[in-house]
Length: 143
Image (cartoon, rainbow, N blue to C red; front, top):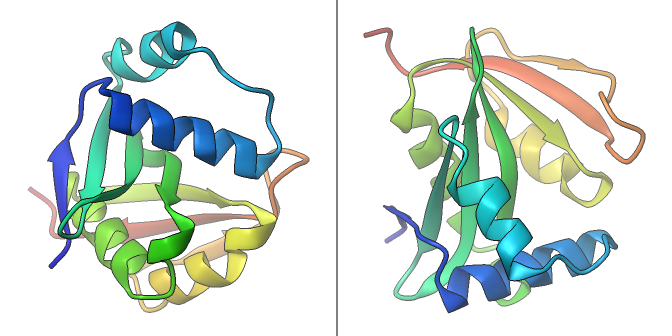
């Protein structure tokens, strides 16, 4: 069973964030910077992805007319088990409405598979040079 649990800047989540940024090839981030950026912005909500133990995280960012997955990570030992897709759909249930997701090169197949069949799904060019594609779609029932 996969669940999302609202997270705080714990040692586990900060360690996972360091692993995530290292995997992306980004420079090391100090914990104070990560905490300030991801846990003190009122438009960002962070969740730990839990499947018997914390295996990753998802950060959702609220924009005026849509919600965006700002960061999404499942640790390498827990990939290709359906955990990421289940977590993504749990995230979508947090905020019914329009969503946007940008895919990194290594995650493009994952996002295409996970988003398949969602209403209004449109794939477009990447928004940033290090991305592969950008998706827009509708999730859930309107409130």
